[in-house]
Length: 299
Image 1 (tube, helix red, strand yellow):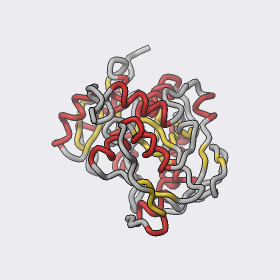
Image 2 (cartoon, one colour):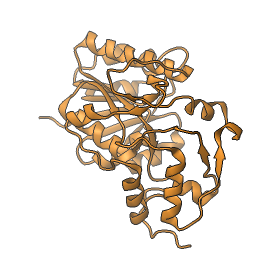
Image 3 (cartoon, one colour):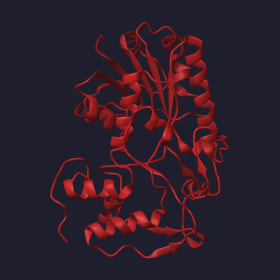
Image 4 (cartoon, helix red, strand yellow):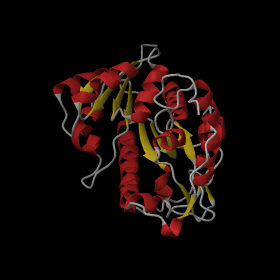
């Protein structure tokens, strides 16, 4: 089998985690909006390209050799930016075997704390989640038109090195908001990387919730991180009186427990099945700040 060439539209936090984990197994290219981020992409094992909504000749040349296409760009009012700019190029990609689209569990909307799986109806609440549903459908339709498998990865709350409650406690931004019976699922970026690679390896299409096993109250995660650090957790703040941005408040308007049997059935085993396993690893390895291992912070 010829070497895989993977092209990531929108090589941000999740894309870089994927590349770091799989840089020796494939040629990986990825886009960013700013050439100031080129070095960070190169360090992750990604050959960087600029994409700000317009298809360049350089991107076109790369797509012509790409076997696996990953889209991690948020939709906009005018539709999916990648489809808007590159539909024709993607339709004509001679080496293309598979398409992956990174979406969000926000597409399900609010289920009052009940369990949802991939068969649950999408009842998006926020405008951004409505646009996600539309983008998912557009990619699935394109895949059907060109006869290529499309995998939709619905991600729960993403965390990992540099983006977690340990960092927030260290810099003083951690809060323990308490809304009775509210839970969220989460997913460590290494498990996004692993699940995505499993689907790439098998050219597997379908819809997959990429999420941990344990929906949990957000204040419990902060308290657990504080216990690892040996510091007092911040005081609990009732949700009703908390000062929140409209976007932050909207997250709490959706309450559900997200099931992940489909990605396991596709052959992926979670590295971090719950937040405690992930935080234990990040704290012990010292990679919680920015991914570079160092000694746990002394207090």
